[in-house]
Length: 190
Figure 1 (cartoon, rainbow, N blue to C red):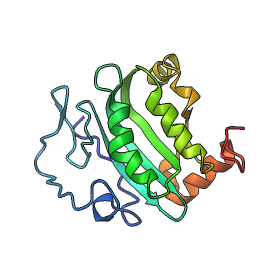
Figure 2: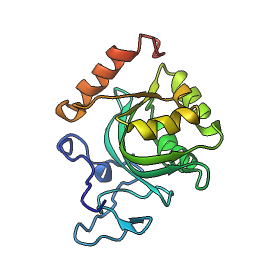
Figure 3: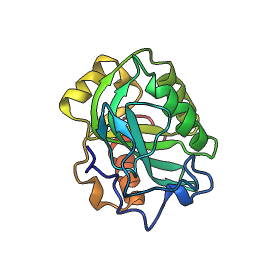
Figure 4: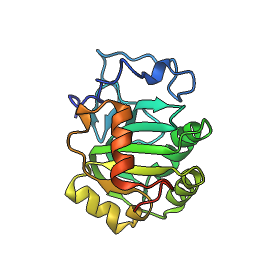
């Protein structure tokens, strides 16, 4: 896991630690010291801790004018024991939502497992974005992980889909693609 870095090809457009509105503003990274772990496995130091012991993230892109954010995740998403969605919602999403973000892409290809609990935070998140014709999309969950999300009925709140070539897009174009492929003017799944 230590060799899995967050996607970095958009850093010429957006850097979360340089964004004064980001929860990670002014964070300093030491790329030579691996200190964060998920189940005794070191992870790359560019991943950000947001309260979960088993799930880390990187905000890859935010556009406050377009109301969009792309967040990449790594680890085990565990709502049953750690209530990871509460940390994600309160420590990251709520900060961005207060600044008008209502369209979220979650890159979940490095989320290895999911353990569900109640869906209160997901329902709250959907209500927050729905008010502004927004949406939440998770890209590239493995088949097994996607089945865990479906078992927990999280797919009622988050659209799970694949976009294997997402890295070739500039962020604005990725959001346009997701918007045009899955959502109408109301932001609801068609």
